[in-house]
Image (cartoon, rainbow, N blue to C red; front, side):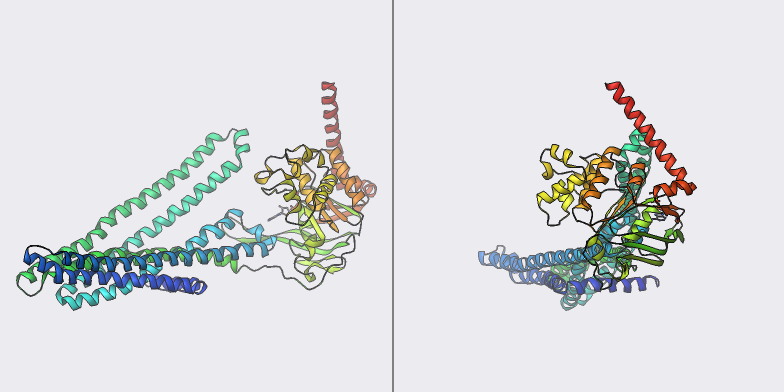
Length: 609
Ligand SMILES: Nc1ncnc2c1ncn2[C@@H]1O[C@H](COP(=O)(O)OP(=O)(O)OP(=O)(O)O)[C@@H](O)[C@H]1O
């Protein structure tokens, strides 16, 4: 073993220790089962020697076997084999429990950690990586528990086997002592040669699924842009590379396997040659030769388990490093003890807030981008405030800060005068609700998607759907609110999904409702009705709305105009229209767009009349 492999072996054994401490009982049982198997395998050889000596040799000498002799042979062999099998069953079951219990525990911890980590951490980690951490990486770390108990049993088996060989005949024991280290060495070389090839094939397997995932997810773009050919080529390239990597793995295995298989066969042959010579010269009885030859052939296969463990250890280290990075990730939001008052509309305020995104480029270089500069704004209790600004001006970031999905790097965000960092865990989400730009539907019923596990009656669900202007289309669904919406709500239109997402927020009776372009996919008339409904029903709610339409903007009590992450101006629509140039440009564009849309609608109406 090379010098640099030593710390890695020590590290990997340390990691294995972490797993053993999680499931000490199952692991101990697996090792006990394996030890039983090891000892019984060696005893099988002793039993074969014994029956050869006491039953077979006399029967051969007499020219026939008596029923008693046959029963004795059967009894001994069957006895040791049954106990051996019991050992194998115990090891397999207990090793399975160890591996799957440890993996399940870590999977739960990783996913729990995902939920604890703030949005800022999630911004830096793509969802593909999160899936891999919770799934493939956890598996890669703990797969070593499949061969490990067997490998420990093999060590016991080897020691017992070698002791037995020495007791039977020291000369032949020397052959055994040559075969096993040779076999072990061949396995090590094999694992060294295989390890990078297997890792590469695994990496490419992940790439194939990434490309496939992207192509399937973007099916609409691929088809509508006529990119099928290019996508097929892209997929073919990566699958060809995987094919070549797999062939390479097969070639290496094909080269090593016969060599490894031949070592014990050659060992057995050597025992038979030397043994026959010894028997002929009267120095050894045939039973001893049979016993040692059997021992060598029967021990050869389990010795490979040591190689499997060594082959798994690099994956264990890589998997663990990735899983551990998630478990140790900092940036977990700290929570305070303060409880928010539950007494109607909340007053939200941002004061002198700065926020920067951490960016990691392709080369892994880290930098920051300041998206919000010195922003102060207020949403007085019971009012509707519209955030208006060009694309990328920081509106979504401000909504995230208002709900403490991220913490500001400077300044304060308060709800009813309390700094969000002082509020208890879950305190903010209990009084405030967000309807984000991208709505997400669970593969559940309409009612399940609105209630999200909350304890609401059907009447409450319908009332929330009413405010969100969703009753009409939900009533038309085959099972009303009990209709399943399909994965990600695929059976619904974009506007329908947005209205269900809105009902999901409304049903919670939030004291602060944050709408981030939440009605972009519904037509202006429906949007108007939704906002009017919200105003009617939400005396106890303050609303912060990211607005892109004149209809939304004009419904707001106050408008905050942002540009480049800074508040440029705030006031009523009339005030900003008169004094804020950027705002004027933007609303003129919005108004023009609304007029064009109205003209198109009128044209269509005229054509159908
Ligand atoms: N996860 C992120 N990492 C790095 N930069 C980001 C991230 N999210 C947003 N930004 C940057 O921060 C700035 C503000 O983005 P934000 O999404 O808040 O703008 P917005 O006004 O809501 O835009 P839009 O109207 O297009 O939704 C933009 O320049 C954007 O590129």
